[in-house]
Image (tube, rainbow, N blue to C red; front, side, top):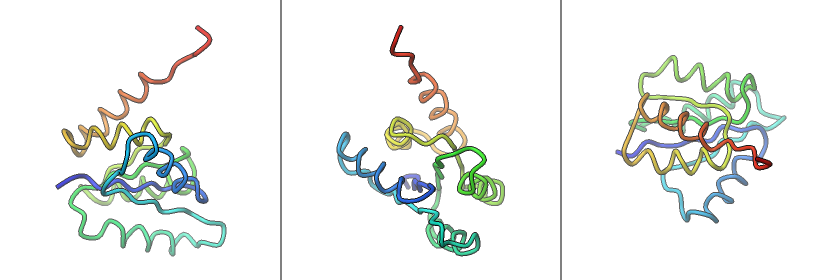
Amino acid sequence: MKTKIILLTHGGWGEELLQSAQMVVGKIECCETLSLMPEDSISNYMQRIDAAIENAENVLLLTDLAGGTPSNIAGVYAKKYGTVYAVCGLNMEMLICADNLRNTYYGGELVDKIEISVKEKILNLKR
């Protein structure tokens, strides 16, 4: 079964990012967004995450900001569940990379491959 990708972001940024990525690569299957909005309580947000990961065999949480609430919560889930993995620093490159690599890798190996691939794509365009 394909790893389910869940984008955990502040505000509606995740929805916009997913739509933009799909403009580039087409439909990204088995991917959803969960936005943390100012009116959300932490417990409400976690209930939505619980519902999203329920019945999923493998889950990859991609989050926007290291140290932010979505990333902190993702870390809790990654430590609590053996089949939930989390990576922060979300951008379009990471999302497209995760979508492509999850066809070949899963779990910790998928996370390692994403980390390596995305780091290699950080470029100083002035050089």
